[in-house]
Image 1 (tube, each protein chain N blue to C red):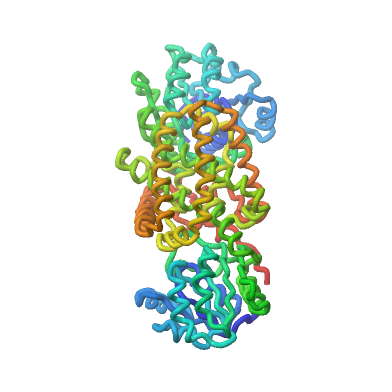
Image 2 (cartoon, rainbow over the protein chains, first blue to last red):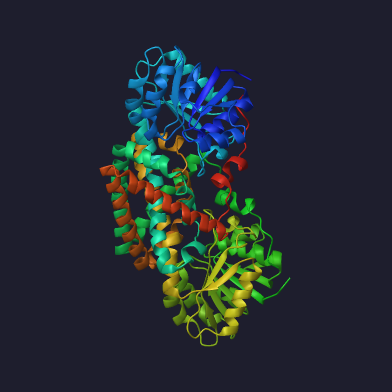
Length: 311
Length: 311
C-alpha cells in the first residue's frame, strides 16, 4: 500500500484505463478512482463489471476534485477532452495521458491546461491486441516501461508523483523528450504495426484466390502478424495520423531495406541474405536480456495449448 | 502404438528431425529410428542427448534398409543429399522431406530417386524460432497441418503411409499441388518472415542513433518481429532462393498495399486507415476458429511470465 494520489480520474475506459483501475486497487495506489467514457454503452459496461469506484455521465463531474486526471482515449480525441475538462480541473491537480505519440499530444493538450494545473505526458509501453473496458487486468504494467515526457516547465514534484504512481503499478520509468520518444516508438511499435496490417491485408486479398487456405495454413510468422493486426483500429488510425513524420521516415528506411533484400532474392545473392538474417538474431537476444520479452519458445504456444492427441 | 514403418532414417538433425524423433518414440510410430547429420559436432550432440536409436557417420549407411527416409536438411542441401543416398536406398522404400518449398525440392530431388523407390514430398507446418538437435520436442506437430505434395505418378499406398505417419505424430494432413503450396506459403510464411527480418534490420541500424532504446523500449509489434527474425538463417536463405517467384509476387503486392497506406498517412486519410485496420481484424478471428493459433491474449505473455512485483 502506497497511496500516491487521493483521487484519480480516468477518461476513456479501454484496455489501459481498465488495467490501471485494477492495478491501482490491487496495489492501493489511490483512495478513489472515478471514470468517464464517451458512450453510454461503455459506461454501462464499466458499471456492470465494477470498473471504477464511480462512473459519471459527465466528463466535468468526473475530473472535479481529482488529484490526477489521466487521458486514456485515442490520441485523436485528446484535444477535445482537454478543452472539455479544463474549466473543471482542481487547482494543483495533475493531468497526464497514456498516448502512444507525444509531440502531437503536447501540442494539442497543453494550450488547454490552466496555469494552476500540472501537465505530465506519459506513455506506458504495455498493451495486448484486445480493447474495451473488459480487456484490462492488473498485471498489464508489471515490469513494462512507462516513458515520461515532461515539458520544459513541468513541475518537478508533479513529475515525481507521476513517476511514483507508475512505479507503484509495477512499471519501470524513464524520461525522454517528445521527438525522441516519437522516433523510437515509430521504430519499435508504429511501423511494425503498419507492416503487420499491410501483410494481413495482402493475405485478405489472396484469400479470394486461395479460398480458406491462407487461414488454414497460416504458419508461424503470419499468425503473429494477425495478432498484431487485430489491435484497435481507432487507436492506430490516430497514431499514424499524429506521428506522421517519424512513421514516414522509418517507412522510407524500411522500404529501402526491403528492396535490397528483394534484389538479393531476385539475383540469387545467398550470402547477402544469410548475413542479413544472422545479424538480426542478435537484437532478439538483447531484447530478452533487457526483459522486454519472455524467451518461451514459440511464445509458449506449445506448452500453453496442449491438445488431446488424435490417437 | 501404431507402427507405420519398421525403420525410419532422418537426414539432418535439427528442430524438425529431433521433434520427429521424440514424437515417433512417444507414439510408437516406428520400431527403429536412425539419423545422420552433416557435421561431426551435430552427430556428437545427438548421441549425447540420445537423439535417434543410432546416429551414423555415413549417410549411405543411415538409409540402408530404411523403410522411410526423411530429408530434414535446409532445402538448398537436398539435391546433394538425394544424390548421395540414391545408391543405398532399399527397393520399395519411401523418400520424403520436410522442406518449406516444394516445386524446387521436387525438381532437384526426384531425378535422383531410383525407379524402385517412392517419393512423397511433404511439409509439416510447424516450427519455433529455435534450431539444432536440442530444440526438438514431441508435441511440435500436435494439431498442426502437414501438407503432402505428391507427384502425378506417386504410388497411392506410399502416399497413404506417409499420411498415416504424420497423423500418428499428431498432425492433420492435406494434399496440395506444388505451385499452389509454394504460393500459399509465400503469403502465410515466407513473405512475413522476410518483412520481419527487414524491420529488425532497420531497427539494428537505428540502434546506432538511439543507443539501447530500440531494445529497451521494444514494444508489442517489434518484439514479435524479433522472435520471427531469430529463425535459422540457412533455412531461410534457402527458402527465399528456392521460392523466388512466389515470394517476389507477394512482395510486389505487399509493397503496393504498403504504398497505399503510406499515402493515406501522408495525406491524412483517416477513413482509409480505419477501414483497412478494421478489415484485418476479421482474418484473425478466422485463424483462431481454424485452430491455427491459441487465443491467449498477448500470446499468454502476461500469464506465462508472472514477475515479482517491485513493491
